[in-house]
Length: 481
Image 1 (cartoon, rainbow, N blue to C red):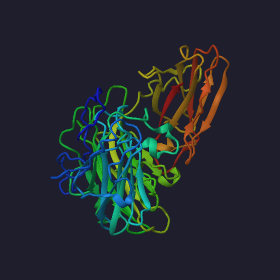
Image 2: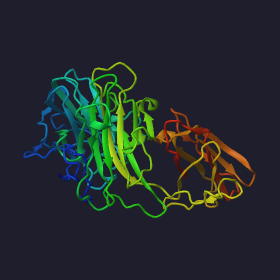
Image 3: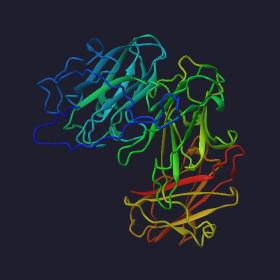
Image 4: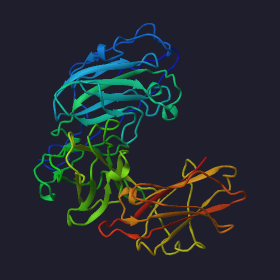
């Protein structure tokens, strides 16, 4: 990929970890590494106008609308520029009903580089109606846009590439500054080929664990890389259930002392502002292979109001699991499919003082992270009676505000009515109380740090345990402004 810079500036480079994982499910072995885009033998180049090299307004590269869209071939990358910063580039290709595609942008050589364009991708059908859109990839590894989708019909499809500042109604979420120094990008539209390692396609062999599609991983990952697979399928009936099997080789992720391994199942949001599916996914849950009736963690994407969801439980590296994806309890829509980004990582620091932190007078002290925030993850092993208390130092936070973000059931845990209390121990007053619901996170607003306070206390509790879900985990972050 070429990087176009204004004179006198430069951008450093960093290799991205590829998206790797599931192959055709035939061997259950490691499989070879692969990116989510197909290899190509040709590259189309769309150059900038000579009058638009300063990052300002004005100029045209000739494909600024639907009528002047440049033809592209599925699988063949296109190199181009967004110049000026308000530029938008249009492309057109022919697609087939049910064709599964990835649309990816590569602009940033260094993730979140402030000098590089913050791209947005939009997909339109032949009638020029928006059917899918993305500003940031999932997981958020850069500002390069990425769409995974399944096409609803045969015909022409248009792709628009633009910069966040000229796309967003409110640019507060766009990478600053507005005018970037590096404006080059590579666009690739490629088939999500289920026979390629890293792409896991359900083959509709059945609705239970006996016909599960195996998820596999690359034999070797880049240094610091995390294994990720793209898991997807179509819902063929209102009662359709797709099942994938997975486990993690012992050397696939290094779990530091005081931490634990976490699964990450990102269910992408549906609709024209997401992956283009005509309806949400239903329940997504993980069970052990030893007992497929034992739901370790579960989410219902319908609780997330088309924002996407993340099933995020701690798992045992020595265990084998099933991932179930259900159609919601609703009539089958016109183009019902799902995309789940399947990965693995490690937790924040774990609770260490379960024997003593049940009471407010002996809270477990937290250590600040490099960013000055505090993080903790733990379990309420006997939900309804177990209570965890954590203290954190605020002597250096005078005049600032503090907010607490916690998640339990919204990450798939079985904790019911998980509650977060922020306490001032000097006055034994509650600064805020918030309960998690199926539709809302346990997040406090930004609250003033009490004048003269030395420590604050985080009290975590739950009303009970879901009878179906065995997970008892929670995780929290404390942040200052």
